[in-house]
Length: 298
Image (cartoon, rainbow, N blue to C red; front, side, top):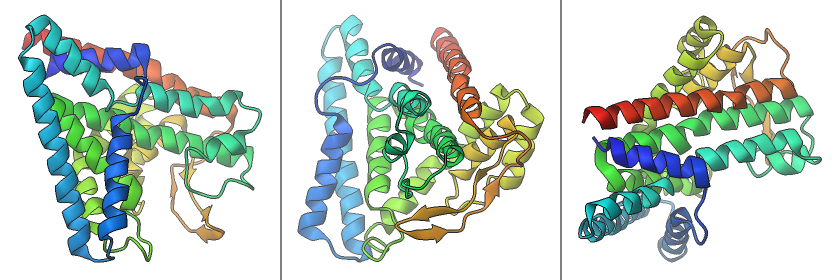
């Protein structure tokens, strides 16, 4: 287990956030877009070849970086690997992006960068709801899942996971263009996030004020969404805040009917989003405590 590496990486992201320059995920995105331009066919095989090729390239580069840094003195190798690993963590960016909804004069403009649904006619309640859903779901994709694979496999683990997650965000859609081409990426992403999504939900339950309601909501509503994973942290957040998340939303001018997660006991407004985002302090404390304990014991 790579507790020291994960601890330093988490601290670096917490203190400094994104590194300057082109982010590694952007390089992955360029690879995906280039492969798609040249080899796209809406069939399973080309999509599977994209998955295999990106994962192989990512794994080989990350292994090379580990070998290169391991040739340095130990006091220098670990911090460099931690800085590289921190590029796969998005707590700082995620929290800042969602918290921006609380201070902006144009919330509809701000929310469009966080969700793929139509935002032009969204009410403030719908904007705050979308912000909470983004916060809960991406706690898994952007924080807990990368940490999980970093702890298990070191720098190659977090790099390969981010490649999987990037492919999912770019091509894993049930549209006419990507139904077959993106299917392999979607399946791999579902598998990779199965455990982290449930760990994220458990973390939210443990830190929620209304733990019992959060747990009940997670059990009853976590499996209601089309995604096998996204519903669990969202349901836990809804239960913890005693609100309802999910529900119908507009995409490309069409209403998509989605189940509601949680029970609307409290009103969903600006203060509700503030409460959800305030959970970051407890998450940071809990994660850092666990990582420090693991580092000391190993």
